Length: 511
Image (cartoon, rainbow, N blue to C red):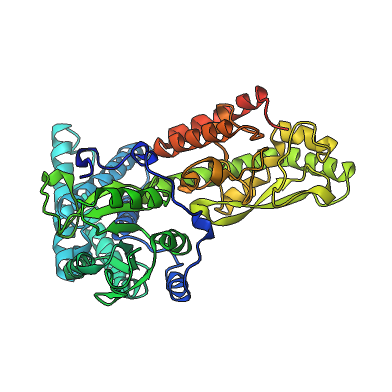
């Protein structure tokens, strides 16, 4: 049996298993699976994300109602503005909390008109009561207009109910068009998969959409269709499928007693930036309730969580946009001077484009200032740049050493292809000085693509940048990348950004 006390399974556990026999990038999907993947190319939004956005919008609407009421009834005055602004901001956040307590943000509530009215009214009534009690104990009840409080709550009720009516009108079409759902792939077919699918479909207001089934077993042991869903391919084909389609989770239906088989599957699947669960529905093993997560009443065991959940990804994207925009403005004079120097030094274009591995192993075009001679620019990275390489131009030596050649990648960041901080994107066919591919050197190499690659990263500020002339250097870089992924935070991103200029001063391996 797997060590269930140590779920989610650690990467160290999987390292003891043999490596998958094939590079996932070399696996081809069958035509039907490829067509199915195309149906799920557009991103969806989960109910959790939707309710979070609704909460933010409603806080803004409540605050707006308070300010409008203040200006219309109380009137602007230097002596009252600070008091009312503080009360409006605190009351808006408080109202969101009381609506949460009243269960006004439950997805089932959003679909029911009557319940929404009752719960919004309960939340606003609770807010008014808390504000009234707080003003009384602070002896500030005479500083705030009671009529304004009534107008604020009444107008907030009207605005919130109107916004929820508009949202309710859109929910059905969003679900029908696949915008509002969580997409799941079932790993393992047969009776266990059928039982799981039937249970998921039986959940009221379920947001789970099963996209297909993948199983290594032949049709005799794993039928080509289960509960109306096609078996789309093998496990290694699933890895490719998950890179073409926008999938949220994998659910493994193999029995927990098949320890070696389960761990072997996880060895191949952990490289994907998805939530991975084991179905506990048909298991005879019973654990403590806190060991499970649930989709409705369907029990699951969490094995791997995606590195950045929905709101983490939003926060990181906002961080990237703000700091990349500022950096691009500040670096504009240096970038202009670099472009002129390159043009004066050698013939050819200023910007060099190279195909590299991006998020989830997808191919992206990364921009750099050209540092090699134009006729020897090597866009496929067939030959690694080494010390004293005669392909590097005079300007190129300086901009590579100082990493100025990376500045155009700020555009990649604004386009959403790169992040400011993350594992460095390697060329698609990158090799070491010993002509070994990176996939051959590092077991599970594609696991570093579970987040967007970055212009700088944890490995770079720790000195692991530049030429890969020894396999151990790539392994150290890989380990640092995984440490970053597993410990990500906005504070860590900020620290790496600040530390990057200092790390460049002591860099010895960039040529």
